[in-house]
Image 1 (cartoon, one colour):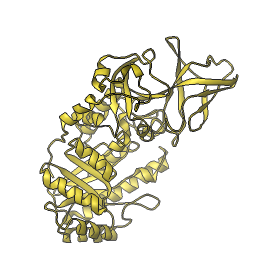
Image 2 (image 1 turned 90 degrees about the horizontal axis):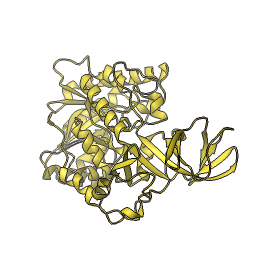
Image 3 (image 1 turned 60 degrees about the horizontal axis):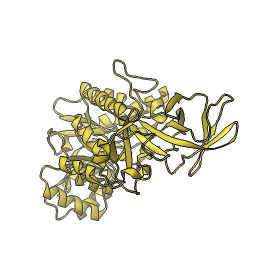
Image 4 (image 1 turned 30 degrees about the vertical axis):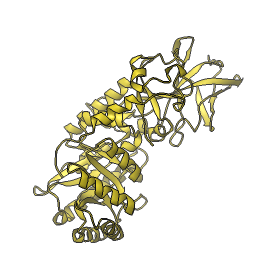
Length: 430
């Protein structure tokens, strides 16, 4: 484990622009079919007058740039390494921008994610899960042997997992670095107590295939709002993680000790609890795994983020929502209801319904207020209209979205926009 910069294969990322557009990308104008992604981007097509089909999801390029700079600068100023969780976007072009902005590494969650990351040459990966599948572990071993510069770390939360990993990696030439994952009652994975953690650490040290490299966990499963009670719960968990790391100090087998927590909701508390109070002889590298900061949102993260609508951090610019959905008013069966071409197949609905922001008609865009989404079906959004609603059939409505993690997987190609001009396309791989 080193402190070198994270790297990606620039040629592989650049090659995304060589893919040709066609019917597979449902919102893309047919006039662009046959062009490469890069060629289409260089035309800077107009979002409303070039034939893009609704519904469509777009990314605001200026908001993305702002969020990249804001989080990179904040982490650097607070002693945190940033390993963004790529499951949010699964977009190597965005991964590359995060790495260019100073990301220490990238986080993934599944073996499938891991193979995609490696296809684009990601050199440092935090696998925020236990990896016990024998086929995946054998594949990982070949990657570690093939590339001496590849750094990989994953979780363990049971002695059984250590045994399974050791068996699958019996022929590996490089050890796999693991972190003891601390959980909590009511949370998700992770060992629940110090005694169990010590037993796991002992098993790792006895394994010829593994090295104990630190501790980790996820605080976001324990709280879901920004109330004082929730923040106290998060703080208590992070203090347990801090104490566990010190308790395991004599068990670590690497030059540096990773201590990682993750999420986009409580990163202020992670900085407070995990960047100070370490014994001088313990070379801790505190790593934050936030992912949703890149796009932020108009719902869950806006409410709960330390840099959201109710900021808990001062002196730092607030994050900006970068994710938008455009849909067409396809029916207005009454003066109180409109139906739009936007549904569960297109946008998130698990952490809040979309919020109407503006509408577009005949080349003119205007703000929209007093309109509320009441429900979302597979292919329709139900929009409650105020008495003075200007909306008519054929108008396009822009929505802010909540919880970006369940939006990107629905769109293999997302236009990057500056105002009404498309300046690029982001390719996703799910």
